[in-house]
Every structure is written in C-alpha cells, then in structure tokens.
Image (cartoon, rainbow, N blue to C red; front, side, top):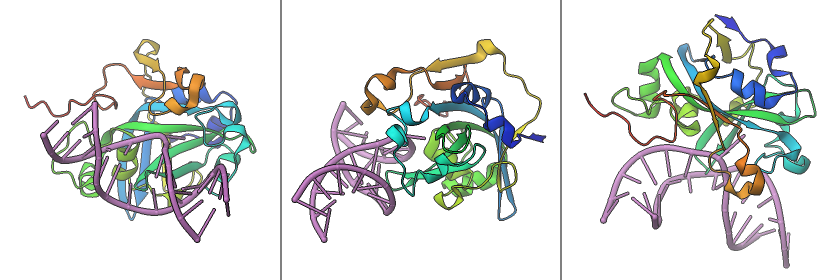
Amino acid sequence: MKILPASFYQRTDVVAIAKELLGKILITDFDGLLTTGRIVETEAYNGVTDKASHAFAGRRTRRTEVMFGSGGTAYVYLCYGLHHMLNVVTNAKEIPHAVLIRAVEPLSGIETMLKRTEKKIFDSSLAKGPGNVGKAFGIRVAHSGQMLDTSHIRIGDDGFRLPDEDVISTKRIGVDYAAEDALLPYRFLVRGNKYVSGNKTQNTGS
DNA sequence: GGGCGGATTACCT
DNA sequence: GGTAATCCGCCCA
C-alpha cells in the first residue's frame, strides 16, 4: 500500500482530485484499531468562488482555517451538531479547496466499525454517507488539521485502477442554497457500487 | 446576547 | 414525506 504524498493533494484542480480519489483506500488507526475501506463517493468544493463552499467569498473562521492551509491536511467539521464530516484539503496554502469523502466501501476493521456505529450487522449502510464515514472510521473534529500522509488518518493507493467509464458525476447533495453552483457536476461516484449514498435500499436479504 | 439553520441520518406515518 | 437529534458558527442587535 502506497500512501498518497502531499504532492497528490497540492495540485490546482480540486475537481480532478475528487475524481481521482475514487478507488483509493481510506485508513485510520486510532487506539490501535485499524479500519480501511475503498472510497466510492466524493464531492469537490471549489474554494472562494463556490457558493456551496464554507470558504465562499474568502470566509475564514476558526472552523474553516485549516482549509486555508496546505493541501494534504484533513478538514473535519461538525454538521447538524452530531455528524463529523471528513474532507481532504487540496491546492496550495491560502487556497481553500477541499474534497468531501461521502461514502466508503469497508474492507478491514469491520468489527470496529460495527462497534462505533452501534450496528448489529454489516450491510451497505456501514460507511454510506459522510456522517457514517466519520462515525465508522472514528474521525472527529479534533482531528481537523492533521496531515494525511503521516497521521492516524491516511489515504493509500493499493494499485486498483477504476475504469473511466465506471465514474459517474452528478450535482452535489444538500447544497440547494448555493443557487447555480448547486448544479455543478462536482459529485463523483462509482457506477453500480452499493456502498454509494443516495440509495435507500440496504440489506435486501437474499 | 439571542435566534436561526446546516456539505445529515434514522425512524415515523 | 415529515421531523427529531444536537451544537457551533454566523448574523443582527
């Protein structure tokens, strides 16, 4: 497993990075508990010109400060007071681009994820949706600002290559307040993957 | 200092 | 389809 270097994140095209993150491996190892999974859904947030971004028009607060740091750090924020959402900061210092990790296909550490999410059985909902990704992987706002190549949160490349025709782009979820920017095709997902969000069917039995 | 709402989710009818 | 859970940031005073 090759861990993605900071240079992967410090490129200028956040939309391309969001697409390239599909198929990569999210790894956390908090308290000696290793959890890994394949990223199957992402969204790009294009900084100060993107009405859907927390950093739109240069809005800079303690919460969003890490987005203004160098690419390759984790930006974690609390949504609705209870969901810890994992983002990857991209581009150079002072350019607040980010990619939201919206869904992950669990690979290892399933038992740990079940404990963290208080679920009884492993089904496609385990790390489906950004709130569940944070919960299953044990990510909290306290981890915001950590480097992704050296900390307890990392993203790796196991050599898997997702064919281009298996990548679908759509408009982003839950950003209707962003007017015309809500229509931008900045959400990327793996075609036919059951761990992708926006699909209410879960465990259909057999 | 007060009020409002969100890059969500799960469970209700 | 509707709404509770739950808290921080932001806006306005």
